[in-house]
Image (cartoon, rainbow, N blue to C red):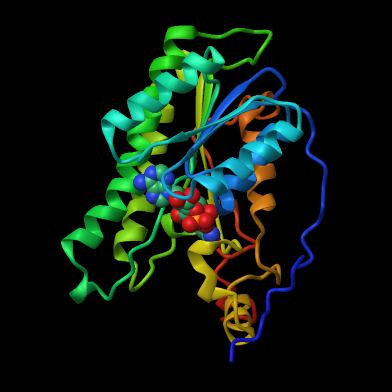
Length: 283
Ligand code: NAD
């Protein structure tokens, strides 16, 4: 029998979100679940109008919209598959028509199709690369086109636009049984850094967040039994699972002028997972 586990609050602090993004317009992909939902809500609490991208589960997207309206900002939901070029172009067109422009893109949508390497199908490989990596390319390209067209509006932000790529600790940590996923995240690292280098002179800031283990539907079996949670904690020096809000606060900061000189950086939000925890007792 599964026993529930990661305690409902896990000791994560409940902190208010500073209103750093008033007047800005954001688009968050995969925003009706997990980290994307947390980020969309935090951007709204920070004062941004938010376009909520989703691909399945209209009700969950509507619930995010309703909460955003409760913060007094504009919100719209847009159904689009981020791996489809035409759907991504149409999504940006719809958001820009409604909001006037987009100042912030959070490239968050992602998935896993896990398999032992020798059994991994081309379909499993292609699905993960096309959503996790090509999806970020397609959305970033539309965002860069819009940021370049508009340029800097000093009353809104010091930058012409901000892109935040949701990566993973697996852009650094190899992951047996997940070669497609780890490859997509390693790809995001170089996509983010190359793009950041290319567009910095246009006053566009591109950065990434690398979450560690965050409690969302993507990794339920890593935290939903006592045994799994205990095993997970051997990888997390800080001793608790991450919550979507831990990532969301980092996203608000990276999207705001408070981080204006931060360009091409990956911010690890992982409770120390990348600190080689096996060496904590001397190795
Ligand atoms: P999740 O499954 O809760 O959310 C993923 C979202 O992406 C969902 O809304 C899903 O519908 C959406 N999505 C999937 N395919 C899509 C497509 N083709 N087009 C548009 N949207 C699509 O999982 P999550 O944990 O919130 O994951 C969000 C991001 O964070 C992913 O990029 C994931 O790789 C990354 N991440 C998560 C963790 C973690 O521990 N949860 C750790 C590191 C990185």
